Image (tube, rainbow, N blue to C red; front, side, top):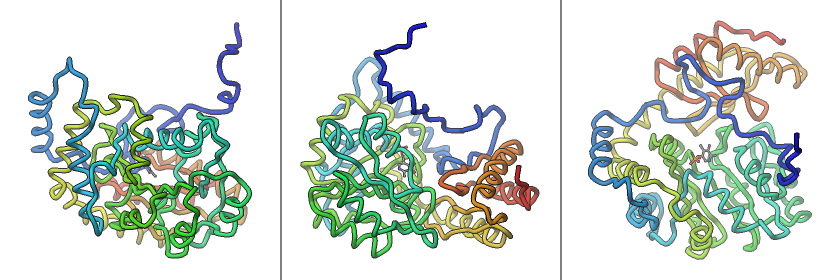
Amino acid sequence: MANFPFLRADLDSLRAYTPHPGGPVTQPLDHLDTNEFPWDLPVALRETLMGRYREAVENNRYPDGSHHELKMAIANYVGQTANGQITADQISVGNGSDELIRSLLIATCVGEDGAILVANPTFSMYGILAQTLGVPVVAVDRQETDFQLDLTQAQDAIAQHPIRVVFMVHPNSPTGNALNASEIQWLQSLPEDILVVIDEAYFEFSQDSLVTHLEAHPNWLILRTFSKAFRLAAHRVGYAIAHPRVIQALEKIRLPYNLPSFTQQAALLALAERELLLKDLPLIWEERQKLGEFFGNLPHFQLWPTVANFLYGRVTAASDRQKNQATMEKLTADLKAQGTLIRCTGGGLRITVGTPEENQRTMARFQKQWPPTTP
Ligand SMILES: *Cc1c(COP(=O)(O)O)cnc(C)c1O
């Protein structure tokens, strides 16, 4: 058999993204491993969306490649969370924020001697997408007390590597913490030749945005998504908010018709009905509180505070970190066998806040597995 020498050799070390590690999901399960919103759109909105499909989607026509109407609607929504006005030329829309992350890497690092900086544990896509583009990834640690990034390490990394982009999540995934004052101060101190990306995928859950900083910092960019609080993960829509110059670069790089017509309809409807959709956020906060009390009182388990729609904690039964890691991996598999999917990542467990029924089952299943056994 040929060895396909036309393929890049460095791709051999990469693995294709698997949403549910450990094999495909067959039986109906509680999906608490991908931080989606636990409920679909209300039935009346689903009906409205079907009507939009009938009336507004022309299957034989390309979608609106300018995204003009959607950008206007997004600018209006974002403006509500900012002190000033946001205009459509400050917005670019992607097929999920994943597409925007890839476009950003192309716009900044590809073909240049540029690297990106991430603080682990964090969202894995920055590193994965950078690797597929041959862009070096410099990773620094976070302190384990509160998962603040190690500012000394980060500053050294900036001094030693040709960092062109810093990726921060606010609040971070998987650890659930928002950027604190010293982290924000450090980001503000970065020179203007570094792009600072603040990923606010969980903004609606934390209600804390850095959009107001954009005006003073033309080298900052904010990423948001419709995949989480807006319940549209199936439709793949994300957006970037930044200076028009940066937005123009993203617009040059994206594929011409990156957002299907029906996806645009779904996003427009969700924004028009945002009051209705976001009215359910307090239910998530209540459930998060319940889960927090349960996991906070679980022996041999350390839970960290969270402002997102997921919780993060670690098994601490053994003094040895590797043993605890093995225990958590086995626990994740055992829970899956019982019907609950959670994510074992970043040296801990990430558990999405689900419906009250799902959360009840999660707590009962943890209780049943406790104390977890080391394989
Ligand atoms: C879920 C998530 C996203 C959303 O990605 P999409 O491609 O828009 O679905 C982005 N960033 C982080 C940190 C996330 O957790």
